[in-house]
Image (cartoon, rainbow, N blue to C red; front, side, top):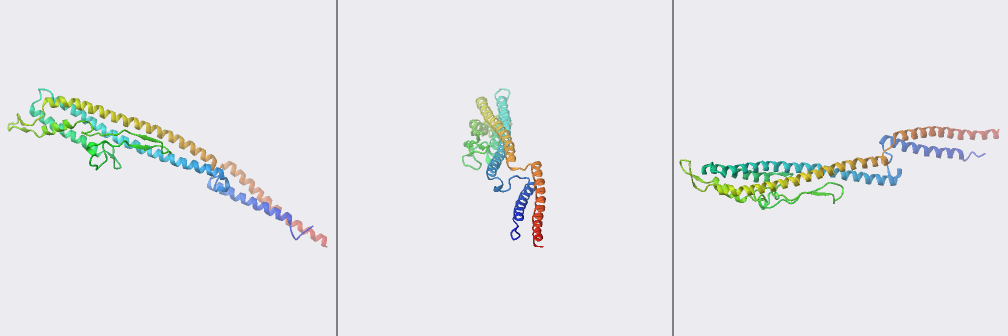
Length: 301
């Protein structure tokens, strides 16, 4: 028997130290709710879980982009809905002007209405924007804004730079709707000179011929406006569908990450209780291994 080196005690101490380390790791998992708290817990699992987390973050940003895009498209659509009402009113005014029951003085009044309505049509195109981005014509503040189309808008709805949804270019103003001639005639008619008795137009005026010719132009403008709105509506449907798909992906990927990263409390609690019992048993084993050395004293009596 040897007392200088207590091999059994050293073995028991080593086992106890390992058990205590395992208890520390188990407590860390229970306190954080994570199965992987550091790379040494599961190196490959950590790499996969981090990649999944990055993917979810990117997808969630794509969802945010999609929701912003829907808001933008709704702004454009509502503005063009107001333009549609304006064009409907202008068409009605032109029909009123294209009949002999309307006097020349009455047509001057109609021209004033049409001129103001076309001004408002332009104002809507100029003012409609989302966070400074012009939606219905060329960029705000651009020198050619009134005579140029807006560039088609693009939205990244997804985690890849190829997940792009685009709209067509739009020029929803008098120039874009090819109503320049009507604007010129209406402006001239609005500034016509009326006789002192208010019964006749002395200079200028708005004629039946002008009203008749303008009706076809307004019909074409309405058709073009409806085409713009159709593109906006179909794009909105596409964006909303993409957002719903991304939300499903995000949920499933989070579930996959949870399987790898999150701790199972039932399993880990059972493991902790097991290690706690082993630790207590190890302490008893150390005390017993130290007590056996006292048997040497009997040999020396």
